[in-house]
Length: 295
Ligand SMILES: NC(=O)C1=CN([C@@H]2O[C@H](COP(=O)(O)OP(=O)(O)OC[C@H]3O[C@@H](n4cnc5c(N)ncnc54)[C@H](OP(=O)(O)O)[C@@H]3O)[C@@H](O)[C@H]2O)C=CC1
Ligand SMILES: Cc1cn([C@H]2C[C@H](O)[C@@H](COP(=O)(O)OP(=O)(O)O[C@H]3O[C@@H](C)C(=O)[C@@H](O)[C@H]3O)O2)c(=O)[nH]c1=O
Ligand SMILES: [Mg+2]
Image (cartoon, rainbow, N blue to C red; front, top):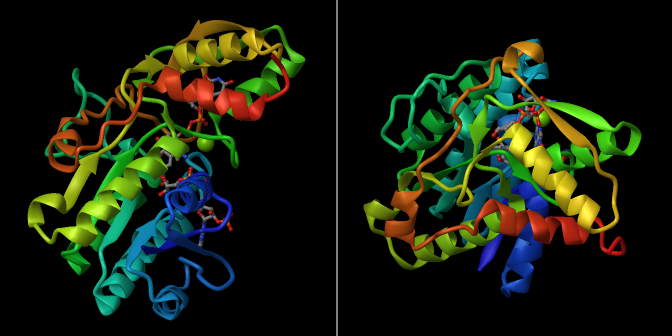
């Protein structure tokens, strides 16, 4: 399969290049300056020139707090930019897999969110991603939206790397314990994307299209996640710190984040046969990559 993916250095695009290549696919990553999501004409032009069998829309404006003061740019990239990717997929007549987020929800529900639950983003980033979902669904029927969450990997910037950096220069790190979710490895996301792509290319049924939740099994708070990161690091002889559990009110940020970010992934298991590993299993894989010599 010839897979075009948006972005060049992001966590999901880098993981898809690795996992897709291992699986024998031709993965072409297209990003700035050739494809700039803030410039819709460049998006259509670059994707048409690549002539792929399937498009994966993985690039996005992901700076959650900064988005609060860069609303126009966040919406241009995540909203209109996603629409431009969908127009390219329509022109090429190929399946589109678009990546979205748990931050489309307000987090007030007491159980994991299912796909049909009402959205209600609490910040600009979530609102811009929701606009992107709608642009995709309005533009191209042959689309699947995968909502992922709390992404980490050996690549780019993420919570795991932030925690390891903080542990390098302090004994204790304060982390919020009242936001719960599903930490998900970008490498596992890449494997899920490949399975969904295979399904879409070989089967045109509408049941395979639409919105799906796709996160790792298992849940935890950011404080739980930090604790597991430090335990895994210590076991490899790397930096560690103790976690002080704090409340969201004690960690003020420009953007409001959902208290409950948990996504129910029953639908994608049933329809696509995709079930990502437990997050603690995937964390070990990523820690082995980040600290290969530390054992
Ligand atoms: N990170 C997370 O925790 C989560 C992410 N998601 C979603 O998953 C997807 C992948 O996220 P992730 O891999 O972590 O993102 P990263 O922040 O690691 O990377 C973002 C990517 O988007 C590219 N990009 C940003 N702006 C533009 C632009 N104007 N034009 C073209 N490319 C641009 C970057 O380009 P460059 O390569 O040039 O740097 C980079 O490749 C996104 O859709 C995100 O919304 C969903 C839930 C959680
Ligand atoms: C660095 C740090 C963060 N925190 C808190 C802030 C926040 O509530 C939580 C996670 O911090 P982050 O800045 O990594 O979170 P954030 O950037 O909001 O992560 C989100 O990114 C976007 C792109 C998504 O789509 C989401 O799924 C989610 O992964 O931990 C602490 O409590 N202590 C700390 O030392
Ligand atoms: Mg962040």
